[in-house]
Image (cartoon, rainbow over all chains, first blue to last red; front, side, top):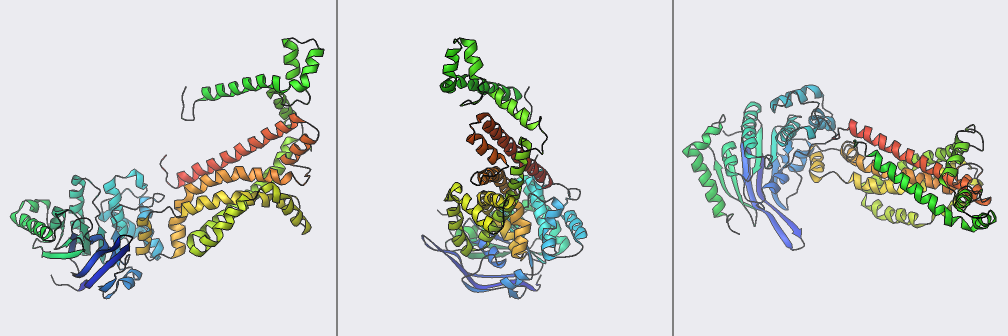
Length: 259
Length: 289
């Protein structure tokens, strides 16, 4: 599926100056993400996958290279509110109810029909009926679903997700992965998803970007042939195992398994 | 029985213990005054107790003397009379409340400025800390004289002294509170391209509420102290401070102790009120019960 390019990065590098000398978080990263794709960044800790996502979101600025989001600079895209961002933790405001948490971006941006948007997006994450609850009354998985509804509340075309299910147990994670796929299929969003789980990356993605640390770089980009509508069963198929194997080979080639 | 509100029996027995210790300590402490009288009356336990616990101007009055004085000045006198402790407490309370309100406001405004500007943080903080190292007794008379010369007397100068003392814990607490949101929540607001004032009112301020109430509890007690101190150097005719001063002129220790008790009742009531407001705000903000 060759859609309109949403994210394009050329020779992107980011170096952090620290007390122990420079840290090369990203080194000459080239990346293209097209509309409607589900792209995963996978790699061990310190490979720059979260940093790359933060550069796309303009929460971090590259030291050199070029990046465009929706044909604009990352900064302009952030100002134009081009994307919804889901963090590693739900980062809900504890003093707001579920519906007011989902409504937060709408308040900030001054968008109309808040009630309708909140209802629609809580439906998308299967949380209708929890509008009046406070975050502490929900489980971790439900809290993260609220944060996904919040990221979708203002209907951005692009969804950036930074290990959103990393803190959840595997059973909840499987369920949320499936729900996320359904949501992606229904809404036609472009999703960029950071993870360190190989099965998660292979199950979810149309494109898997394998990354490696020191310096943070892309070692392989794998296209997945699985259809958009998929169930957890595909994880038992030889094709799935082959893809997972190729991801593991990519990680190995990038010395990700060495100390 | 143990209830959620805390065990009443240990509290009561501790009070009893303090009262017993107080009564016993009153005997040797008052001996300077009562000793000769007891000997003149022929000594004996009954005379020791009678004189030690019923002296007109004792070094330390017995608890029941304070209770009687409190009764006489709180309930047995109309509250608008100069002899009424309610009247004096109200005078002090009114300047406490005004000073507390102004101090809390100043504290919050300073904290907002400090959090939003590195320059102000560097330039204001040393002055704020220096202001608290000056003994209030040293500058209270000057504040009152200076303000008196431009026509401010009575309530306002005392309130300003309260304010001067009580803004400090609010500033410190609110700087901590306004910077308490975690980086993820701040990044989230960044992704919305939220303005500085939206970040302040939708994130920083609500996140600082627990810190605000903790510092308000400290501040309200300090504001009361400030109001009393403000009454001392001016020869004020009314207020708990005036009552203390008056008592010490005439050696009326019973009156001093009654005024001290009144001050602590007022302080306890104020702290309880802040706690009450804290619990209600917490409930509105969805705090875990």
